[in-house]
Structure formats: structure tokens, C-alpha cells
Amino acid sequence: MKGRMMQVPLLTSDILKSALSRYPRQEIVSRTNEGNIHRYQYADMYRRSCQLANVLERLGVQSGERVATLAWNNYRHLELYYAISGFGAVVHTLNARLFAEQLQYIINHAEDAYIFVDAPFVPLLEEVREQIPSVKGFIINCDQHNMPSTSLSPCYCYETLLAQETDEFAWPALEASTASGLCYTSGTTGNPKGVIYDHHSSVLHAMMSGSSQYLDFNEWSVVMPVVPMYHVCAWGVPFSAPLYGAKLVLPGPQMDGQSLQELIEQESVDKAYGVPTVWLGLHNYLEQSGKRIDSLKLVGVGGAASPRTLVKLYAELYDVYWMGIWGMTETSPLATAAIPSPQLERLDAEQRYDLQATAGRAMFGVEIEIFDADDKPVIHDGTSRGNLRVKGPWVLSSYFKGEGDDSFSDGWFDTGDVAVINAQGYLKIVDRSKDVIKSGGEWISSVDLENAALNYAPVNEACVIGVRHLKWDERPIMLVTLKPGKSYVEGELREVLADRVAKWWMPDAVIVVDDLPHTGTGKLRKVELRQDYADHLIEST
Ligand code: ADP
Image (tube, rainbow, N blue to C red; front, side, top):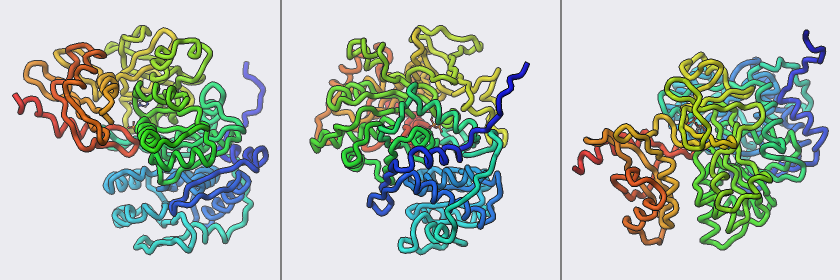
């Protein structure tokens, strides 16, 4: 027997309408590309999103067409999220840190019809203009006064277009399964693949992730996504914050420690989200400047493993709760988190930090499981590792244009991460399957080694990769960058490691480098390093 309830689709335009009716005076604060602070309210966002939807209509955008953005975290980008998806087109967020060839590949693959671009990224598009024939026009996200001179054509000014339109728009009644967003994986293996979100998945993700079971947003919250809006929708915060009426602080192009501290203090930010390197940068700035972040109560940290040393520093120096998070482009992205809980509070501090540094437990709606090479589930004992698979209503069912089909089996999506899960359900990523180091047939976790190295104070960042070895096939080597002005002795680092990892995990070489390469989303670019150092141990023997 079927139920007899209304099948009402959940749409991103419903979040926009709700923000207008429930929280019209709640603030959105942005740092603009010009460096000044812009403030307005949800009612203004609604009005301008209507104007923008009228612009899309005038430009002749068709439903289902991809309309790209290449922009920082700011209010215009937020309007684009709502206007494009609410209109029935697909907002395709282009990653601003990509190289020209990757950008060109992605724009062509997506067949973008228009690109809305922040002025600083105009040169990037000029480089590829001749090779992206699907693009009918460019809109520069600024006012007439700040329009750069450009060879892009046809080219329009965002504010000029908006000013010509009325601030009323009848948001169409779309089907819940209508595509709403498109984001490409960073393509650490092979070409980037497209993940297409729909209205249903985006709204469900916002409802669950913003709830008290996860990010815990409400009208008192002041939230700052430091994770870029061009990568996995800034973890969905541009949808979940308006849904729960939180004040939104958008840091624009300046995501360095000093700029973040200023915004946290000025706007009384209490929750902020980003990859570990962002919080390392903030900590380094606070240490050197003596400045404070008194309003900040929680940082949500994902995209890479949480260094336990930082979890402890944030607790003990700043009284900030570090909440480990796991997710990926393919999971919208939020899936698990080490949320504060009475059980965690009862633990002694060191045990609590251990759990905060994991990726936490799956939120309602998301199922996670680890499997061995024979596809059998692995025991949840906190040490047995397996390939992590995930399912849920905001996990992709296939990639755009049917690529990467080998990632799906029996209703699960195979994440490519290697993980352990403990008896309480806490997930810990120990490696990406392609980063795993296999020495004489035994696994070594690069993530654990990197974390152990951060306990030696002079180390700023550590990166462990497996390289060829004549006897053991592969052995780990460690690359480190150092904090300025601290004296470093390799023997001391090795002592710190020896206290924390098995003897046979000790890296065969430790190399101090000036800089480590990162992807546009703050992950170490290990593929490149593995190539550069492939024969390092063979050459030195
Ligand atoms: P990509 O496009 O490279 O897959 P994503 O931003 O989607 O980039 O990154 C997802 C990946 O980031 C995960 O598959 C995992 O390897 C890594 N990651 C995310 N959160 C964590 C975490 N808490 N601990 C360790 N690794 C993580």
C-alpha cells in the first residue's frame, strides 16, 4: 500500500524564499575582491537573485544549460548559486586554482553556455577563450566602475545587467530531480570527472548538515566558510546557513591567517570551516601576533586528515573545538563528523583529541562501510583497514556523461579512501588507495607518519610518499617544510617519530624543502612528488 502524502519537491528556491520570509534582516558579510567589507541582508539577497534570474532569461539561458562561475566566496557568488539553480539551469562552479588546460577541459566537457567571472580571474579565461566554443558570453562580477579592460567577448557587467531588471521573479516549479549544480573532482588520477547535484540532494544535504546533528546552525550562529565556494559548494554552507537563518561571513579572496583573524573578531564568527592548512595558517599568525579569536567556538576541518597536534593546540590555546569532518565532491560533500557530544565531553582530554582528529561518525542518511579485497566487510575495531564505500541520498549515483563506472558496486560508491572504523563508528582515513605505501608487502600509513612529524615543533608541514626500493619494493620518504626561525635537527625529528610509529615505518630519508605543492583544495599533490622523487632511494644507494 502506498502512503497518501503530497509529493512536494524540495528546491533551492525554497531555501531562498524561506530566508526572505523567516530571516529577512539576517546579515551576509563579504570581503570583496577590492578588499572592502560589503554587508547586506537576506531580503537583499532575495531581491537581487530575482533580478539575476531575469538577467538569465534575457540572455536566453535554457533550463538544464550549464552556467559557470569562477569566483571567490562573496555575495554575488551566493546570488549566482540561487539564481542559476532556481531558474532551472545548472550552476557549474569552476575551480579558480586550476591550470588553464584543466579549466579548458572542464568548460568544454560541461559545455558551459555562460561564465560569470570575478575580475581577478579574467586573465585566466582570456588564455583559453579561443578553445571554449560553447561559451556564448562572459559576465564580470563587478560594477561598471571596476570593469577591467578585457579581450573577452561578448562581455557584460554584472551590476549593469542587474540594474536593468525587476526584482520579482516567479521561481519555476521544477521536479526535485532537476540538476542544480555541477562540480568536478580535482582529477588527482586522470581527467576530472563531473558530479551533478540535484535540488532534492542539495536541499536534503542542507537540512541534515545544518541540523544539530552536524553543523548545528541557528539564528544566533555566525558562520564563515573558508572552504571556497568554487569547490564542492563550500561544503553546502551557502545553502545550510540561509536555511537555518545563520549570519554568513564570506572571506573573499583573503584566506590568510591575518585576514581571517580580522573577520572573526569584527564579525564575532563562532563557527568556521576549512582544510587543515587554513587553521595552521591562522594558528601561525596568532602565535606571532598575539592576537585573539575569542568569539570562535568551533572549527570544522576536512578535506585532509586532521593533525592531532592542531586539535590539541586549538583546544588548549584558543578554547576552540576542532571537529574532524570527512566528505568528498561525490558526497555533496558532508558525510561524517566528530561532533561535540556528552560522550566526548566525559573523556579525558587526550582521548577526546584522538577522536576529534578522526573524521567522526556518519550523519543520518549516510551509510559507510569498509571492505577487504574480496568485497567482505571489515571488522570495526579501529585498526583493521578496508576500502571505504558510502551510500546515501546526497551521494552520486553516476558521474556526468557516465564516466568512472568502476567506482560503483552493489549500490555503494567506492571512495578510493582506505579507512578504519572503531566500535563506536568513528571513521579514520588512513590513506587514499593510490597513496598507500606497501613495504615488503606490509602497509604503511602516510597520514599517520605525517601527523607524527607535526609533534616536532620546527616542522610546519610534512608529506610522506612511497618511492622505489631495491629490497622492499617501496619505502617511505618524508618531505618537510619548516617554520621560520626554528632550529631543526633531523635526529630530533626521528626521536619524535620513534615514540609514535613502528620502527619499520621510519622514513628512509627526510628531506627539508622550501615548499610543498598543493592542489587547488589544499591537498598535497603527491602524484607530482612521487614522480620527482621516484628514484631518490635508488640513486642514493
Ligand atoms: P578530490 O576532488 O581530489 O576527490 P575532494 O575535495 O572531493 O577532492 O576530496 C575528497 C578526499 O579528501 C577524500 O576522498 C579523502 O581522501 C580526503 N579527505 C577528506 N576528508 C578527510 C579527512 N577527514 N581525513 C582524511 N582525508 C580526508
